[in-house]
Image (cartoon, rainbow, N blue to C red; front, side, top):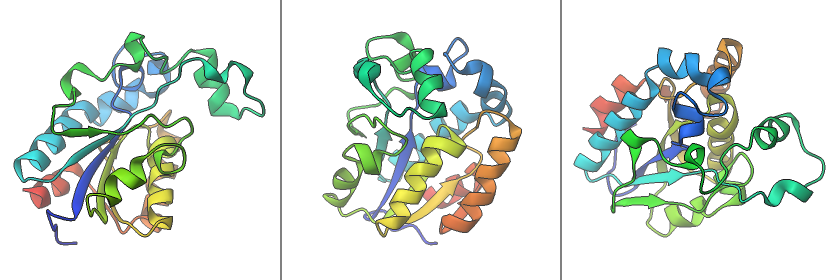
Length: 200
């Protein structure tokens, strides 16, 4: 797919310490994959390349203010996150990774409360109001929030190119499952190296 800079955006999911920094509350689950895939450096390079080419960068972060204390019908990942107090606003774990701090030209969307910002925040309207119809998608984590954003974006008619190694998952099996689903759902599933050459 050719890149039309006026209609393309780079969307980064959950570039926050709880996922991407040693000491994050789920580092024991995702840390090995984050290091193996060199996720932080790949995200940093993608962001730099996109901004250099005039392609807007969007962050879809995850925050909680402990409003989930009264939530019912929690699923497995909800229980993991809430028991570990993941993404608690005001805490270090919810802050953006120090290498991925958003600039003034970064669109930081409202926090998603479920796995997809297209379903539980304002990602869709933020993109559509700027005429975006093609997304390069990366971030954390591969089989959860990234895949959920992918599915919802596709259902809403976006063309999605997923950067399949600028992400990681809680274990190799989960990562491989995500890669398989990317092949079926995304318009394209490419590496960060390929994405960097296109965005330039």
